[in-house]
Length: 137
Image (cartoon, rainbow, N blue to C red; front, side):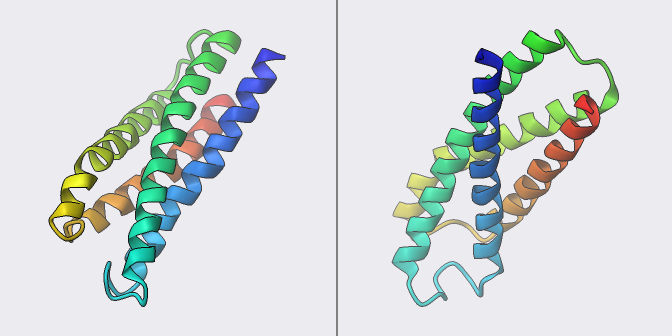
């Protein structure tokens, strides 16, 4: 029962994480952060994506570690180690963006290079999911 609950929470966090990660990329692919018709709406989306990503990554780490140790103990192999490395990179990116965002908002919006960070985050997220599939079968 506990494992099933953890798995359900993990899958929900994956859904929210994918929306946040890909949503930021979709915003980036628009002309620019304030070239859209509704910059207030765009900024609200950025904040919601940022907070969704934070909630999702924390939930993924907690549920993932609990499920891994409950079921496998430790998973040897390069796929699992690469998955952990990319998940750590993703965690670092999300924490950094959440920490810096209020200051960026006071200065008129995020820096231009942040779009590249969102691409790296999205690629890391997708690669982490693929590597988890490889590692756990």
